[in-house]
Image 1 (cartoon, rainbow, N blue to C red):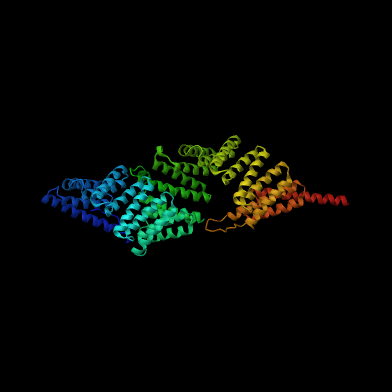
Image 2: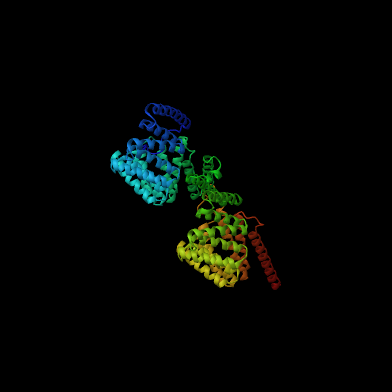
Length: 615
């Protein structure tokens, strides 16, 4: 017969690994004695011997001893073909099981031949609506999913479900199992509405058929949490993933790959919700568990022959990437760099040097970004250059990721004071962003900012101003007149007008910028609060922005020889800097203090001159 999977998932009791292993050992000893006895009495080619061999193979399959399974099944196949012929139910059953084993071993061509032949025999002998046909269709769907043919996989699952509903009832656990597999395939193609619908139907059946807090329910709850994450429903994602992990822990099953995945996605949810410390804990727990599952040696597993081993190493690399991202956010740059470098090493190890993909390019890019922050400019150029080369090879020379790498290379050359090369890369990034994203995209405005900065350093204020005016148009269009980025652009325009000697225009821009910043930032504390344990520091940043604007306005008044207004603005600016926690030896505070001293001296001299004139 066919050993089908219609129990809804991974069981609902506590794992008793030791008892199961002992039971398997005793069963194997019993079956081996039975096989030897039957072979002696009935002959080694008797069908009863093949039945015992089949049971031995199923136990070895459960234990993951696939080579031994195939040896047993090969002998079973030989006997059944000899006794029943090739077109028999017993032969089809073995073909189906061998196909499943070869699928697990990533021998996809062999698996396809076995499962396709099993399906043909089932249909020929039992008709196209038999349950065995449905179960082999499920296995073929799993094969299609493993080879990236997600649409065909969903079609197979749909056909299998139709059979199960007719033969077993619409609320049978095998129907729930098939809904679950359909959801996984839809999620792989980012058809999240369809995935959510399939998961909800699976959950409805399992919740009604199984005991409360069962593992199969936790399985689909976790997958629903991933869909909620992908669709931006972070509160629901947190609830579903948390519930899944709770049940797994209750059953002592929070130590497998599925639990590691749940922890990983909980970390991603926490990042989106700005709970960075909590996210880091989940990512580190996920990483630790994934390493334990590989026996602590990702290097050895990466060289394994199965896609499963390589995928496990890639998942460890993903965890290192997320940990690096949080460390970078927390300004732990050296630790972030170590995480990104380990991510790159493992991704290249899992894929092989000749099969590098976009994820390798992304890792190079993350490394370059941190090296840039650490002023390791030559190393950053090397990392960004590697990312750029891979993006061009994998995605084409005009892809938006190429623009991303070129933009950052431009920033490094800017920091190295190589304005010619910086301009070259920023202009190309600007061109590609317009090509891919359209003229009015925010990233196009960011490129214009970079180009404007270079023109300004080259004393070409007219071109710089032209770029900033276009950036202002885009940001006003996309973000609204009161957005902080609009305020920042106006601040930059004020600097250029001041440099050009148009003090009235400069003051107009600074005033507009200050009004936006005051409306949005208030007294300098974050308007959104410090939600989560990692939100500290945002209020300091916005207070500094207000202080900078007041400082520059004071400078305009000074250029107009209105030192009273200048002094008032500089003193208010100083208050804001100190409110932000900047010490008096900070370069911006020191500059403002120097200006205050200058204004006070000038005003004192004016008073003295007036006194002398009166006398």
